[in-house]
Length: 135
Ligand SMILES: [Zn+2]
Ligand SMILES: [Zn+2]
Image 1 (cartoon, helix red, strand yellow):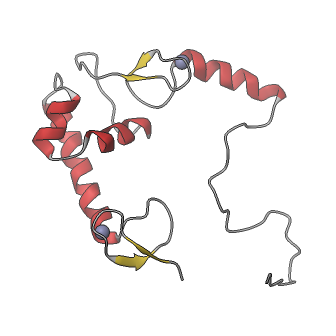
Image 2 (spheres, rainbow, N blue to C red):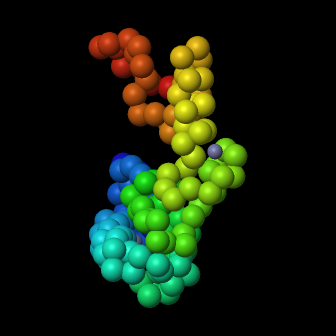
């Protein structure tokens, strides 16, 4: 069991995966997300600051949703974020089309460079039925 303090409200909870926040806060965040999504649909020209103020969501959270490609902005929106690789302004995700293309072609003769999330639970190629305990 992995008990952690919720990053958002400080309550202790059973940590499973993903961001270290408790179920209640996760639900709350999900509600906010739906709210923001609707807000953006109704206010296509809203700026990041406006969205943050009107929905009481930190800009950082908004940006994270954009990076996760959960939020997308239309042509009418002034909101753009920088490609993490070359700095070109894009509307969603982490990289521009050009960098995505470069990465895709780079994959043909190299292994995926992206680091796996830390602390994988299962080791690939483990030895089947034998359980080992490390001291
Ligand atoms: Zn919480
Ligand atoms: Zn780029």
